[in-house]
Image (tube, rainbow, N blue to C red; front, side, top):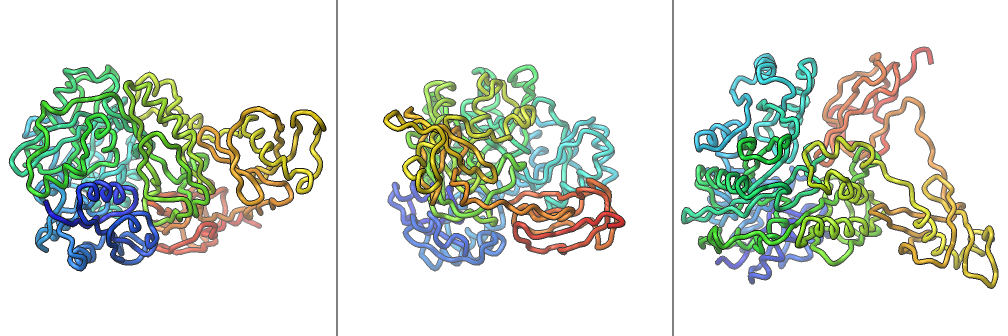
Length: 618
């Protein structure tokens, strides 16, 4: 076993790798950008090296700097985590050429699975079932459109070099194909440097089933069973679980065997995930499950597999990179109970899931279950990286037990002022279809606003806030309405909640915890955290001027479809803003003429006026 390792990543995965490496007695080296100078992974590592400015393309994606940091610190091995350079075959080769150990599959395996079209051809040759679609070299819009017509709508346009939901569009009608193709190609080029796409038949009730595989340098390959990652929003995974609900033993055996064949077809070494799409309209059946792609790295959701198998997958990665054989044979790996993971994002579901940034003045997650995070209270959530700030993982003897533990943990997540999806996760976990195991990738979309819309604070939440404010109510806010002397505290006080005035009834009953926050209090209920404050301390927010289109978040203008003075129609797309790996299209609120306030490629701050629409004759 080597003695030291550099982690070429950041955030929760860097912290996760450091913990295992430290337990194994390895020296750890972190790398960091300007934005991460005070990050948790930097604090945890034995040594840390600065590698560049905050944008990932100038730091975490610069392979030469990472290799230089390894040499500078005497690290013997490089672990890429996931994302960034983890599936970059050229970087893997550069690490090996530099005399370092690469903790991952061979560059040849990465290349074999790196392009979805070539991978599908290879899998078909290996006897792995693949979805119907077009994988050809002709990328002309005309040819792609013809192929989509031949496959039959709806279809999926997918980036050949894609992953993580990027460069993917569902198209329902032929008249929408051209616009979706351009958008997909633009996003693919920006995210992966490759605009090529493939076309697939869209499965009407798809389930996303993936199998964890592991290979060593001695020709051994095993699987560690399946995970169900069907609960998604816009192709991004939200909740993952293992095993898959409704999976019978025969179907499991067939899918897992296909995954092992896939890995063996590319002489796979290390941790990998073979992803399948299943048609759930008739339940899980082996003859309605098709290969989708292979991720040649550790997955974000790997903890659920660890929880049901008792295996530390990072430890396996390190041992196999050091040349050891697989620690267990296939018959020594079994399923114990049920595990479930929820991804906690810094985003606001009530505002179409826009990323939320700022300082984590309050960041408290309940104990009693596994939490993977790379942030602490007081840290800053910046616009430079993925908005996932934590993963909450629950294990139970049954699926219902795992759901209950995970739901309680999400419900107790107290975070402010950065908005999160904790409340949204609670509502997903409470959803009847989810509870019944009746899941597919459309579950969240079908439920719609009932999951996304944040509820108002309940009477119980307002009561908790009022009770916390009572000791200072007389001198700070005036007399209580209905306050009774020589009786249990009970009365109604006025409080400010954002721009609104609300009332809370003070009662001597057990209520939710209220945490002091400046001159107000924070109350958390079902994953939603509200700040209540004295009415006179809150100022009204000025409304934006009519026609002024402001940046909803900091980002980069990546597409501009109008020019100064252009006439536009209501709802017409004006520009595309990219931030935290997502695209946001801004449209005209009404018909008029454009007064342009930005330019293509501009870096803009939240609230900056990008465009103003002036009504004709105004």
